[in-house]
Image 1 (cartoon, protein in one colour):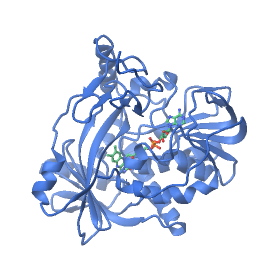
Image 2: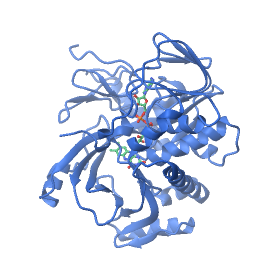
Image 3: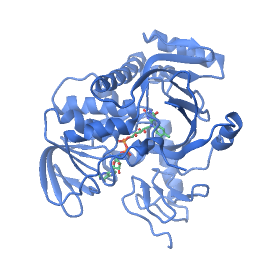
Length: 421
Ligand SMILES: Cc1cc2nc3c(=O)[nH]c(=O)nc-3n(C[C@H](O)[C@H](O)[C@H](O)COP(=O)(O)OP(=O)(O)OC[C@H]3O[C@@H](n4cnc5c(N)ncnc54)[C@H](O)[C@@H]3O)c2cc1C
């Protein structure tokens, strides 16, 4: 069976870096976030993008590419913890991101379609509370059966979009950055000096900079694609962590489930394949995959200065909503670098105040896994969890995933591990 449905699109290949370079902007990481940043900055700057492996080969290649402001996070929770103004600004930032994709769709064909998004509930009271909150924020959400509906959201083919954007800047694949110092990024052999550097590597790769090991974990999720004749294009998520999620794509349906913390035993696990075989007995499964993403402490991405350096930036923590999150990052970082005023800077700045409970949870996971006697992660030495079903090793602290041979599948670790030891 094939891997992700998007990876049927063959992207051009690019050479590895073979000499020292100098540029206005260096973007590190060739996922959707790095590519959108490079694209918008290339209008007024010379941009180089470097990718450790292949463009869109990691989180972005295995997304479900729904572009919506109706996400897992509850607006009523944001309003309660951060205030109504912040909840409304977060909603607006996501709606702006959808419009930016809409503008790209006027120029490029990437199967961008406007659709309704739904969030379904099993408890009436929770649905009403959330719907009321969204409506008081000024957004015209409606109720459809047991779901909240946002009209005019969107979905796309992410690799078709990326294929259109790659000609706008210089790209080096198989080029891994191992260090950054004084506005210069280093591979094992070469250096790239840049006025501005953006780190869009999924999990930021510099070990302790910005204190990300304390405030960033990873979550995985499972997706299967079946053949399905869809009368109408739409997407839907549930309101509980164990709920299934759906999106249509032409004559297929993507079904996802099991958002789980990487490196920890499964919770509320649904056997997706058994579910599909029961519910859709005459529909063959065409693709099946597992993917993961970085998760912030408060549900908002971290976008802005990376540590204390003036012209070094980071974008991460998209909480499995990196289509809008990456667009917000690209627009915000372009505004910051080009000295334009932006109302979203404070909302997403990585140095913002962090909620204490999840912060303490992360610290206790690190401490507990530091003392266990097991195979260790090459990132910060946490004891690894062996995931039998997938035959992979996963770090419960920061989410690095290794193959059965000890090769890194997802960062932040930078070195493979020796499985025989
Ligand atoms: C199952 C699943 C479904 C999802 N569905 C949706 C959805 O429907 N809608 C939505 O909004 N979001 C969705 N997401 C989230 C979304 O896919 C991610 O947030 C997004 O793809 C992250 O993009 P990225 O560019 O940050 O990371 P990546 O795509 O991982 O890109 C980072 C790149 O950096 C490179 N890199 C790493 N280290 C270095 C280095 N040292 N030097 C050079 N390069 C380096 C990596 O090789 C990688 O290619 C989903 C996530 C999952 C897990």
